[in-house]
Image 1 (cartoon, helix red, strand yellow):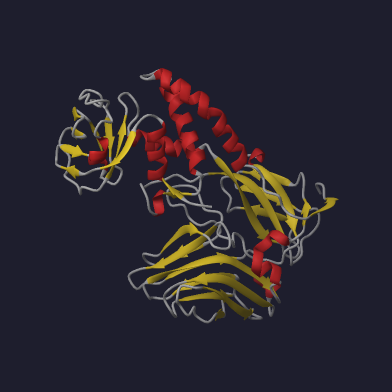
Image 2 (cartoon, rainbow, N blue to C red):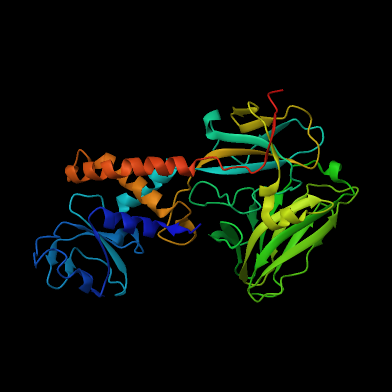
Length: 431
């Protein structure tokens, strides 16, 4: 799935609501000239764009938005109060008089994202003697209506979010089920090759970077067991990226990626110490070299990893319904099995998660995976509802009539529970 930015959403919204998006030809502290804007006001009408809002998203907030006080249509030149002179290639947005400007649009984008949900899956591996499993890593589940599906999967995979599909809520947009460590380390979402997304881990300042997942299985149940871990990795920097397994006492590390920018599957086999302190953890590691690596399809299992699991993840495993077993408490969702669990399978909850908010024009804080058509329709609906009793009311009533149904359809599609693949006909009811 292609990622998009706050800037792209805002600019497409601007175009669809009667504004202009153009690149500046020249700028001073009081004027911006865009040769492509010549005649846009309509046959040399110098009053046409007066009192429009001009916005440039990469400026500091104090300089980003200005009201046009004069417009020279034959030159495509806007005059306004003093602004810091900027480079002549910046993209500017022109918003019609009476409409919200770029600053207000950015706020409305985040309101729309909070109100738009997608279906995400959270997974916990089963283990001996356990009957209730708390999904503490899914804090967005607040009521039972947020839960779309719950089931048990016949997969030995110990990893949650091994496809790097699920990212958190808020401007930090952390990677669900993984913990980032390392001074100045970052993890960002990029388009994937084998799945929708990959996680790009970056080390800067010679400090290294690590992504860690902690497995909730009591370490005593894994004493002397062989744990295998496999991840697809791509990096241009040789001898920097490895994958590791640690049991709190011993650590086993894979061979390092050879570099060259090709996808390589790194694997490691670790025998859990018979007196390990725990917990069992899987790590994606960059050493102190400055650089980055992309990770996809992280899977792990006891004894051996089936070929179907390493190739495709969990999708090919059979599932069993667990209807009526989910409860939501103050700490989140809890799924109760009808009988005591054992090693070798997973339980999963599919829930509705709000899209994370954006804190920047582009970059790590400004990238989202909501389809741009859904975002723009949702944004138009959000702003139209605010504007129908204000200036340009007729325009906004028309826009609301066009986009309200489109956005509703997108909401249904994005929050629709995915098809699980093969599901057994046996339905396990409440205990």
